[in-house]
Every structure is written in structure tokens, then in C-alpha cells.
Amino acid sequence: MTTPSQPSAIDAEVQEAQKYLKGLIQKGQGGYAPAFSSIPVIDLGPLTHGSPVDKQRVAREMNEACTTSGFFYIKNHGISADQCDEALNQAQRFFKELPFEKKKEIHYQNSKFFRGWRPSADILKRSHPDSAQALGVKGVGDYKEAFNWAYQSDFDPTGGDGKYVELDGSRSVGNLWPREEDLPGFLDGVKGFYGQALQLSRRLIQLFALSLALPETTFDHLVTHPGGVARLLYYPPTDKVENLVGIGAHSDFELFTLLLQSDVNGLEVLSPDGKWVAADPLPGTIVVNVGDFMMRMTNGLYKSTIHRVVNCTGKERYSVPFFFSFNYDEIVETIPSCIPEGEQPKYKSINAGSYILERLRLALKDNE
Image (cartoon, rainbow, N blue to C red; front, top):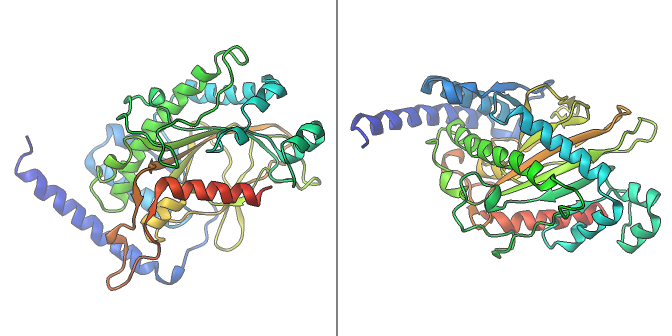
């Protein structure tokens, strides 16, 4: 049972945090964003072992990162090293061991939600010109291969609430998987990482709430069957002479992204002064970046920052991003406390699923 002293203590804590936030909002007027030259590292250990004061300190570190670079590393994040290694290993297996003909069976054109295998246009035209023509590959596009999948209740450690809907509001699950006999152990290999990434994201959304001077459970009811798209990525080795970009400059659509990187560099973040800042892999860490949903919710206070991948190392790079969203049937609205008094929100309310689906369509059209 809640004691009488707890509500007043929580109210006081929220009011203090709101006062702090309003100061940041006022300083952020006029669209000013300071330049940055590095990406901060945030230790999540206090979320498990620290005091409430420690948790608030971590929340403020997140706030500072989100209002400047929009990017930060996290350590002591709770995803085991074994699961991280396994996810990267399965990425390598998928791109190196699964035969080309088997990849074609799960091509993203066979999914109305763009799940499955997506080849690099340039690589495909070089290695399999007939297949490139048959698949309608046109331009050069990004120099990478990808495999995408999304939420399944059997991947959710909570079991889910049985209410998952897809991007278009349907109850179907639109994932495409290689057959077990074609790539034994692959599904089980990525399942564990996905489940741990999902739970970490639910913990982070509570920290985001605290960083915005809100009670930490504010968003919990919006992530009971969340949009969570995971992706395996392979960047072939290139050099500066080829001038091939793994992923071109872009921002992410969702609330935030978790990025597990192999030990090969390539990720770059655009500072407001026009300089690209490296976000090189740091052992034991995961990169987190703000997405467009979070930017919209915070009325532009949190920065959905432009970033890209350029692999000029001469080595193969693998990564596993996890794009976390609210339940696809929820409406994303601006948080009232993020709107300066007397002003209207900068962004309209949107349905989470339909917004992401439209952004995906546009992204694929632009990259043809």
C-alpha cells in the first residue's frame, strides 16, 4: 500500500525536475544547438544498484546528451556480452553462409512491411546482374546488406499482452525468416539478443521519462506490445578512393535506437557546425540515439541527429541496430511540459505505425 508521504515526495521531485526542464527549454529557443566534438558515455549501473538520487543524476546526464548531440554510449546496460557476441556472429553467418538463392526467398519485396533481406544495389549489380534486373534494382544506393525483423510475442520476455498490431494496424506478424535447415540455429541465435534489447529499451524509456521531469512510469502503458525493429547490417570493406557510403546521412524514425557495433569503425554523427564526429566502437558499450518520435514528443528539445556510416577501414563491419517505438496503435503527441507557455506545439499528433510505414516507403523510394 502506498504511504501518505510517497505521493507528496514524488510530486515535489517532479516539480523540481519540471523547473529544471523549463530552464532548458527557454535556453533552447530560436533553434540554437551547440556544436559537439565527442559522444558522452553514460553508466546505467545506478539504475540497478544506485539510490533514487543516483538515478536522477543519470537522467540528467541523458537530458544533457539528448539536448546536445542526441547520441550517447551506455555501459553496464544489462545485455550480456555473450548475447552481443552471438548477435554479431549470427549477422556474419547470415551474410556469409546463407546462399544467395535462399536470401532471395526472403527478399524484403515479399513483405509489405519491408522485412527480410535487403541487398546492396551496387553489390547486387556487380555480383548478380540478372537478379538485380529481375528485382528492379535501379540506382546505386547504400553500400550495405541488411536483414530486418520486428516484434514477436515469443521474443518478448514478458510474453506480451496479446495486443500487438503491425504498422498498418493489422494483427499479422510480417517477419520473414530463413528456414532452419538453411541456416541452423539462426532464429534462436538472434532471439536472445532481441529479448534483452527489448527489456533494456523498456528500462530506458523510464529513464527518458525521468530526464523529461516526468514520473518514470509515464510511458509504460505505451510499450506493452511495442514497435521494435531489429536489423543485421553488413558493410563490405571499401576505401576512400571508391567513395562508397554504407548508409547515407539520415535520422531515425522511432523513439530511439540501440546500436551494437563490431570492432570496426564507421559511424559518424553530424555536429551543428557541419563536422562529422566519429562514434567509434567502445568495448562493452551500446550506442543510443534519439529518433524522430522523441524529437516530436519533446517539441524539438531532444535532437534527432543526422548520422551516417562510412566504412573506409578495409575491414568488414557488422552492426545490429534496434529501433524502439511505442505500440504501433498509439498516438504520438507533444508532451505538454515541453511546450513554452503561450505557444503551440511544433509537431502534429501522429499514429506511430502509419508514420513509420510512410517514412519507410519514402526512404526506399529515395534510395532506388
